[in-house]
Image 1 (cartoon, helix red, strand yellow):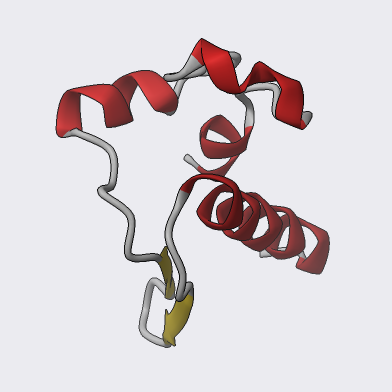
Image 2: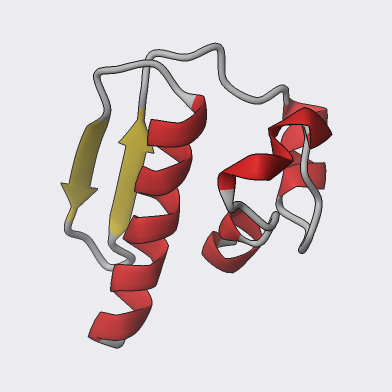
Length: 79
């Protein structure tokens, strides 16, 4: 994976955790045939049905949070 792509993925996940989650934010990496990076926080999370929606471009689960500079692309890019 190109470094710029990994930077974008981590940036999107960390921005979402900071904007919508509850501290602390934990980043974990696992090296395997298919590497895995997880970013987690202590917020309530996203319901499984909403996670499918949130992975689509320009979908925002809470339109009231529109003033924060987020466009609804973060999780779509990560996906």
